[in-house]
Length: 338
Image (tube, rainbow, N blue to C red):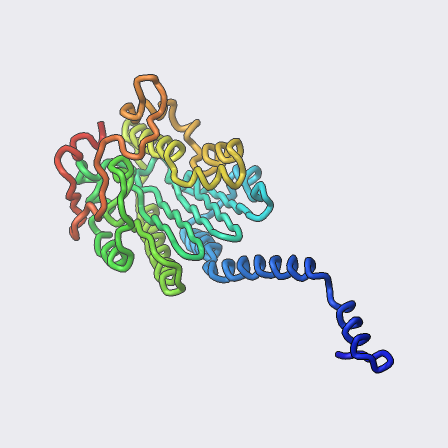
């Protein structure tokens, strides 16, 4: 709009100029708008919501058993990141046959993390349900599995009991989600022949397939836990307990999500969250240390060797064939569970 004073064009220009904000203000506003737009674009690109994964799992579990809030819920429910731009949401429950069902969802402006695990009671040797998803605007890193409680490389009885009938399900989704690259030989022993370990570019179609895989894997796990019979042999219960403690000890020390947690909430809170929530039981289910279970990680100085692969072999391709048979070499088979 133009205002003329006394018909003077110079007066008109002066008034126009006086009505404009200072150049510095315009520049600051433009930069801030640009930042908000980039953040908005990033947030829109993270359209997947992992809350619906949790809701499905809880609803499906309640169809089979009664869930009771875990005492952990009093301490671990939610927290904000140090910069106030991220939020961590936690849930935890107990049930018959289930020692702990827990979930963690991390939401920031640039990423989402979903960590959902269900641990059976020690009287049951059922695998541990595990879903670990990382999502950013451009990429996704996914691990979805029924982590075996016992050795499935050398103990065919345990593998046949829980995984033989699931191989077709695994093939269905591993064909849709290619192998995600190198996986160390130390890590591979905690995964099953049906593990989905993959990386993919963010897109809605892949999220839909991932959601279907999560639902199918969790339904199968619930069937296994519901059909499982309580172990009465005390020696086998002790073995189950030690196997779960070994798993927890490994995850507390080597879980790849530690770096993200430390960056978001600091070292002290991250350590507390890892030991007392995500891998609760590491201090209660056994007394063995990380070095007791994995002595090859101890250096001559008595410190932790932080190299990712101590045994010296990693797997760039899926190390199981279409029948679920492990196709690693004999040396790996021998050293796997020393």
